[in-house]
Image (cartoon, rainbow, N blue to C red):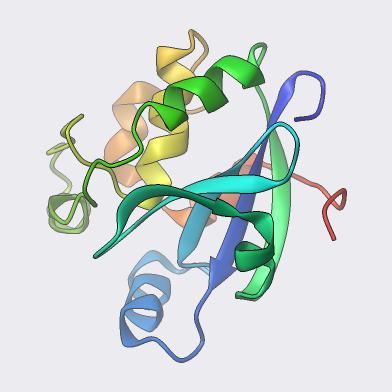
Length: 153
């Protein structure tokens, strides 16, 4: 990663209906958030149908509207290692309903893409977003929290 920052990736899928709905409801230009590995060769994401998984960075670079940002964290390697422990868990389908109803139905047994990064930052000992705001996390909020990063091509 970059010194004391985690790298996050943002994307959208211009053809996907769910992506359009997410962007519309969240007033976001993005519908997806991923955590980039320290060596920038892979990323961890959570998607409906696939759950939490690690993929090569080349797969992310093929997505629409890709941008990267950094968010301060004193131990980015620990954030990555904690996220790796979540691989195999399912997508948190209830997150969207909780977000719409402003209810915190977060469950550590499953993850939506935009809740995984902040939750791992908390577990690593340094929140990147106030925990009482977790029910409001969207791709756009994480994007606004980040600093632009152009170290991945």
